[in-house]
Image (tube, rainbow, N blue to C red):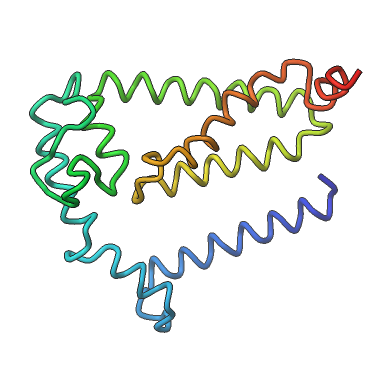
Length: 181
């Protein structure tokens, strides 16, 4: 990145941190904006995620080491058609996989992130799109906390880009040039 772009990115990051800090310290100073009220409702006692959390944790505590398996019911019925689906994806993964499975899955995902990060630092030329895909995957992992995105093959496809990016051992430009010739 150029020096000007780096400075702009740093200034933007500092501004975001300051605004989030202000909101955390003085929430009453925020005017009633639509997304702020939506965020407050998301953490209220009537929200589905807040209701589901204790059920998922209690069901996890019945079999914490190896989990209950996929399709396990936590005692709370969210949907008649799919009673095993919950909004809190990581809590549900903990229920389904247990500590052993979640550590194995988290280790695998972390390993692929390390592979891709090393490739991005090693081959800086042509790495803008893979870097953007990596940021998109991080955003998906953040959003998946409170939404069951991994229950859809559409979003699993994007998550599958992480192992794909780790296969570019010759760099992102050389691999494409080699394929074309």
